[in-house]
Amino acid sequence: MTNFPNLIDGEWTMGTQSVPNVNPSDTNDVIGQAASATTEEVEQAIDAAAAAQVGWSKSTPQQRFDILDAIGTEILARKEELGDLLAREEGKTLPEGIGEVARAGQIFKFFAGEALRIPGERLESVRPGVEVDIRREALGVIGIITPWNFPIAIPAWKSAPALCYGNAVVMKAAEAVPGSAWALADIIHRSGLPKGVFNLVNGKGSKIGPVMIDHPKVAGISFTGSVQTGQQVAQGCAKNLKKVQLEMGGKNPMVVLDDADLDIAVGACVNGAFFSTGQRCTASSRLIVTEGIYDAFVAAMSKTVSALTVGDARKAGTQIGPVIDQRQLEKDLEYVQIAQQEGATLVCGGEKIEGSGHFMSPALFVDTANHMRINQEEVFGPVATIIKAKDYEEALKLANDTEFGLSAGICTTSLKYATDFKANAKAGMVMVNLPTAGVDYHVPFGGTKGSSYGSREQGRYAAEFYSTVKTSYMQA
Ligand code: ADP
Image (cartoon, rainbow, N blue to C red; front, side, top):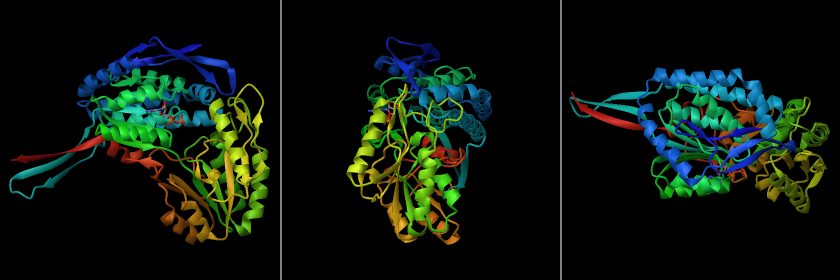
């Protein structure tokens, strides 16, 4: 059994409170004990970050490059071991866990490079003899609040740009996945980063979040999680006039047109809807299929989905791991019932699988209409629906008929429809012949409408949130 302590001002501390970290594939397997920070500990972390940020903001691009690059190198070198810890505590399959860890390493490498390319601008003034320059500066202390579904990639894609642009960090990871956050903090701690620049405080979001949001020394909050919590975070930040960035839910459509390659479409839909147990904000939860291919698609999907192997996340051959916890499993099963009460037909799955973990068989519905709750509310589990559409125009309308706008996909061999969909899908990310989930690490990530708020994450665009611009005038 391992302890997963907080990291405050360069010191590891278990504090006075802790909670068990349990394996969702086998609830008898207690991975470790995670510290649960008190209000005072969160305040100490913020004070430490504010004090350390002053020096870190003056570090050179080379110093930042060296540290971020070293963090990325160690993460990549340990991807199998860290991927196993991730799969053990979160429940995604081992290959998915290792892939996520690799992505975290690549993100640090990317922002190591970005530290050498922090841009500025010099313009001629409208006044004679005056020079103007515009530079990017750090914000200060960034509060980072992360969810459980990407336990290392999301902490990485928030903390790497925060550090790259000269900020200090106080990070609060999700309660269910303290191990991956601790492993990342440990690597960052040993990277040569000055003490206090990166702090980790674990514990209950409803307790720690408000302390970070209300603290005058925190300049901005980057949050990924549910819509409901995101709204609370945004309201708190607005009250305190604090910069905020939110990534929230999705109800991502995947349109399958008559001219699609059936194998590609089924592959993209199975991956997008069910891999990572459907626990991705980019999951393809609404499959919108035109009439000509509908019967063949439903038959092929139902055959493939019912053959998926559900089991222990770390066991070879498992394709779908467990749901994160009992509460989420109950929610998923409740949505299976809601869909049936609304008139949807269950083609396969949707049942709890008895055993030592939180397992359910992936559920696929047909005979669904877009206005049903099952097509409007995010389930965040292995549950997908099929909606029949007359033609491309109707499919596009249905795809956009949602309060979310994170990712949208289309399977087609038509350049005309692919081009039109890229232009008219109301989403921050559009995929053609690819699952709605699964993105690159060097380009922006984020959505429109109710999915995201504030500027984009990742890639060069991360600079918008993690830095601010200063305009300087000088009379020569
Ligand atoms: P999920 O349902 O996926 O767990 P949440 O939005 O509840 O999504 O959680 C996402 C993150 O937000 C977690 O780290 C959680 O602890 C944190 N959190 C929960 N409540 C609050 C809150 N009131 N303020 C700030 N953060 C919170």
